[in-house]
Length: 72
Image (cartoon, rainbow, N blue to C red; front, top):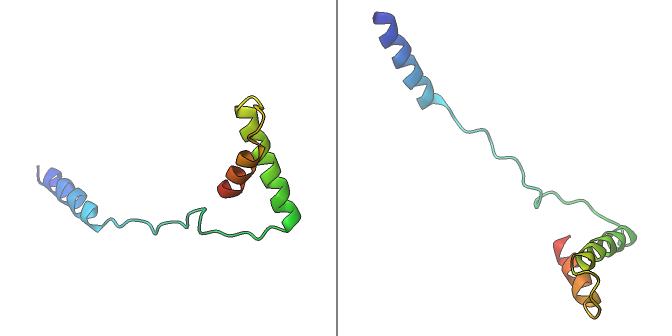
C-alpha cells in the first residue's frame, strides 16, 4: 500500500509541474511577400470560387473580387 500512495503522490506532483508548450505562431503572423502578379492570380482564383458558389449569378463580379482580396 505504501507504493500506491507514492504513485498517487508522484502523479499529482507531476501534474503540478507540467507547463504549456509555447504557443506556435499563427498563420496570420506569418507573412510571405507575393509579387503583384501572384497576388492578382490568387485573388482571381478566389473570386472565381466565390462566384461559383453563387452559381455565377451576374452583377456580383466586383463583390467577389473585393471579398477575395479581403480574404488573402
